[in-house]
Amino acid sequence: MPIATPEVYNEMLDRAKAGKFAYPAINVTSTQTLHAALRGFAEAESDGIIQMSTGGAEFLGGQYNKDMVSGAVALAEFAHVVAKKYPVNIALHTDHCPKDKLDGYVRPLIDLSAERVARGENPLFQSHMWDGSAETLADNLAIGQELLAKAAAAKIILEVEITPTGGEEDGVSHEINDELYTSVEDAIRTAEALGLGEKGRYLLAASFGNVHGVYKPGNVVLRPELLKDLQQGVAERFGKQDPFDFVFHGGSGSTEEEIRTALENGVVKMNLDTDTQYAFTRPVAAHMFANYDGVLKVDGEVGNKKAYDPRTWGKLAEAGMAARVTEACANLRSTGTKLK
Image (tube, rainbow, N blue to C red; front, side, top):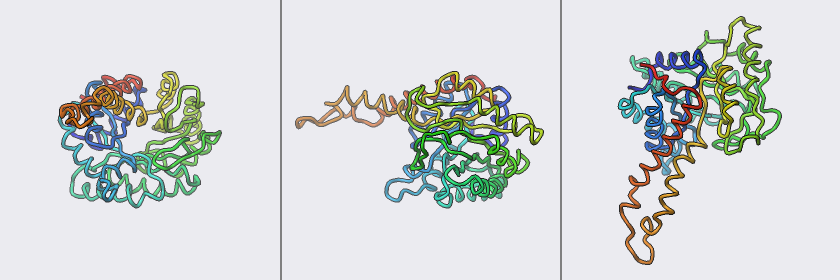
């Protein structure tokens, strides 16, 4: 199927919320990891979301000039071609973008999609994320208003993060402390500034103790039940039930119970990066250790071309990551839910 149209993406999110499941949002940094994500979704018979962070896009832009926009556009265009061969709907998204990178990443990409829409085409990306968690809430929401208006005009959904997620991702870091919990007042201020759909659809990354990176269950105190409080608090103020489409950030290492509670309370998208990075790299490491005398020219020998051919270990990497994506679909209840 082709990359999801704006209409299909909206339907995907509506079905996820109604069915209390969520789509894995898989970070990719290459055509190989893109294919791994597509394969994982296809094998799970789940639609899904594929995303690029600023660091991922910079890497995709090549180490000669490290241009984020070129990297993101190139992989998105590639995805529009190859996704047609997979029997699932895929939305393209850009992950965390802080204030100092908006002009070099999200704003140009929204402008590019606006030009496409003006020509009668679909946007290149279906959603973009503005990460203003390092700013004051007032400044965060003011920028969010500007971006939401531009995104809506280009048939794009905006994702906003209103309070910090702990840990570090692409150079943006927050301490792991009691500040990692969004309050009902924060949610009400967000609804006042961004509306509840009438100004454009947005996804909300609220904080309930989330932490990016690698951690074991129990090391971080997640409170996904907090999302219910946010839904109810805003519903009481504005009269709209379950007003938010939530995003679960920092999900690596989460327990099944924590994920289940988040789904029951309106999470429709959950980001995966750390776990899929490891799933991609682990088979490569095994291959290199098991075939060290073939991938290296040891003691003047010539090695084994079949062992160091990137296609050999690349296929293993793709299979490993695809399996982790399929597992994520099962955890998030999206298995077998693809749109027909």
